[in-house]
Figure (cartoon, rainbow, N blue to C red):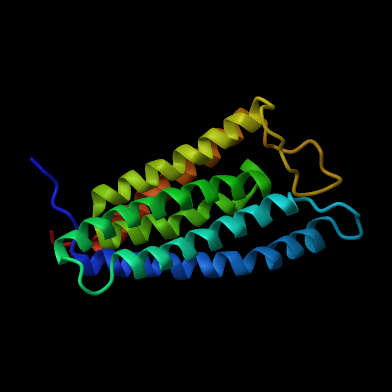
Length: 207
């Protein structure tokens, strides 16, 4: 049985919300990096986070928004069949969610990995997707975000990627403690599940 596509209004609302959230996140990157540097490694010449990596994250978010704006004006404008617009909107929203998952995984790695609260920002997207597209899509988005975080955590644990310590004088943190990693990921999974439930319950999604 085919799954009904969300209404055009729901797709448009979610797309606009994701675009606004990316503008805010990109603008907040310099402030977050500066705050982490000042609060966690004061007086040190090197920041506790990957500055250039976070710049890449901000650039990815800005580029994604620009492409969404250009695509919307060229492919979703006047004269296009409403059914075609709905299909293109659905595709565009799903691609946006995928880009956000990649950006989250990058920021998670560059901002301290498993020792950082960055991963919990995924709650916002889980709530938004579940609210506007439905619980099924919310669960898929939440699973994708959790998978990205798990992948980065495991790569850091196995020294496949560099782990950025949030404190320059703290080189023996909990990022390689299996019990801590399991607790962190378990808490994130539980919170994402709760977010999807809350998001889907806040608004009835019609097919």
